[in-house]
Length: 272
Image 1 (cartoon, rainbow, N blue to C red):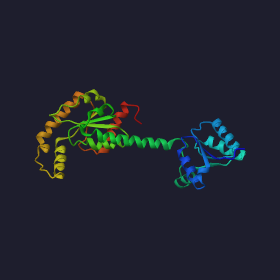
Image 2 (image 1 turned 180 degrees about the horizontal axis):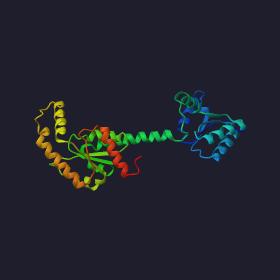
Image 3 (image 1 turned 45 degrees about the vertical axis):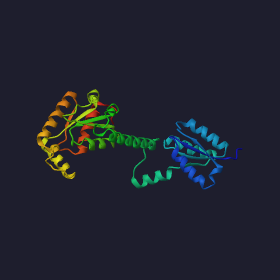
Image 4 (image 1 turned 90 degrees about the vertical axis):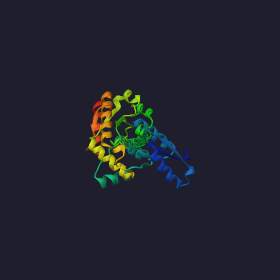
């Protein structure tokens, strides 16, 4: 009989959580004398039979984070029959959650990793939005999910960040009469969303912006004639591209974002 101290960490997912917990406990018992064997991605009864067989032969402990009900039930029953200590590491907390919050778990393996992946996708999207904000680098348009175009102060940047938090990679490009839009805008026109606003509303926003910067409200930037020129130019570019256009005059960022996502959901089945 093998006398080596072994703990089998068994999971229907990666098993990282269980392994960390077992290591923490093992450290309280001079963990260097305890070997941890990770058995991940348990899918069926045969996988469990193999683990139970070797655990019995080596007189080992099984620590597990299995959430699929029929697999958990089989492991509990067979371990008891074979005299093997099998510890469900998640059971006490799962039970507490159920009792306290009056909700049942979904019993789906791998959800933590999925949450982690969503987090990293969100971070990546935010970094993307910052890098490709305000037409800084048009090379990003090829990798963008959404390209926002419009004159200055039409909420392009706030929208980019809001959508990035929903894991969409967004680039935005300002439209200025004196500057020809980058060719990439026309090349990736299916990704484009045009943002327009009424002249009076834009005039009001720009004046407030100048005040906040400590500049005179009579600057060219807030001149109504100049604003009319910019808006006229922007609408012509949007017509050339043939992209959807949203009037953001009296809309919150969230409302505009919902409209954009509704448009994309209609066209792209990959948006959930």
